[in-house]
Image 1: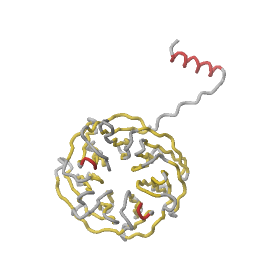
Image 2: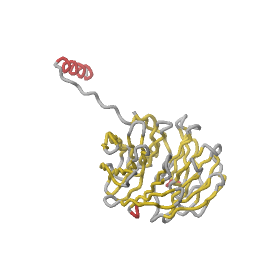
Image 3: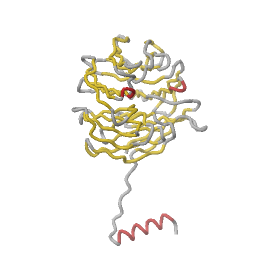
Length: 331
C-alpha cells in the first residue's frame, strides 16, 4: 500500500466519521526563481526597479558594483564597476535615469537609463545612503553624513540644500498625500518628522524601549508607520496622527529591510539571522507573524515591487555558496 493511498484512505475515514480536516494554509510567499550572481562578494544594500523595462538594480556594496538584472530573462544583464560601496539606488522613468549613492567616496552617480552610461557625478555627500523621490516636487532626498537629509533637484541635476538631523539617517519614508517625511535616526534613538515644505524637523518621536531602528515602511491611508528594530528584535507600529507606538511584535534577528503589501495587508521583513518574516495585519493595531521563510545567514537586503507583485531577496556568498537573488511571488 503506497503512502499516498494510505493518506487518502485516512482522510476518507475521517470524513466518514464526521471529523473535520482543516485546510492547509497556503504559503505567503512562493519561490518562483533563483538568479545566480557568480563572483559577487560581500553584502548587498538597496534595490530599485525599472518596471517598464523589466530591470532590477541591486547595490552590491561589498563588491563595489551595481548589478543589473533582466527580469524577463531571469538573469544578470550587467555588472557595473566604478562604484565605491554603493548603497541607495533610485530609478526614475522620467527622465529615464538611475541614481546610485556611494557611501565610501560620498558621491551620487547619475546614469543614463538606456545604456547606463555615467552622465554626471555629485560629490561632497559623505556616507551617502538611502534615496527617495518626491514625485510632486520632482525632488530626490538622500540621507548622508553625520546627520542630514539632502535635497536634489532632478531636472537641474544638482544639490540644492539639506535638512539637519541629530545623527546619520537610515531608512525614511515620504507621505504621498501629505508633506511629512519620517526618518529613522538610530544613533539618536528617535524618529524625526520633517515638514518638507518648510524643510525643518517639526517633531521627534523617542525610541526609548527599542534600539537600532533601521528599516521603515508606511501605511499612509491607515496612519501607521512600521519600524524594524534590532535591539531587541521587534516590529514597532506607530500611529502617525499622535506619534505614539500602538503595537509591537517579536521578529527574527538582524532586520535590515521591510515592506508593506497594501493589497494583502502584510509586511515582508528580511532578517540577517536567515529568515524572511511575513507578518499579517488583522487591523491597524494588531499584527502577528504568519510565516518565517528560511533564507541564508546575512540575507537581510530585499525589495518589494507592488507594480510587479514580486518580492526579491539578496542572498550573499556564504561558505562557497554563490550569491543569488531569490524571487518570491505573494500568494
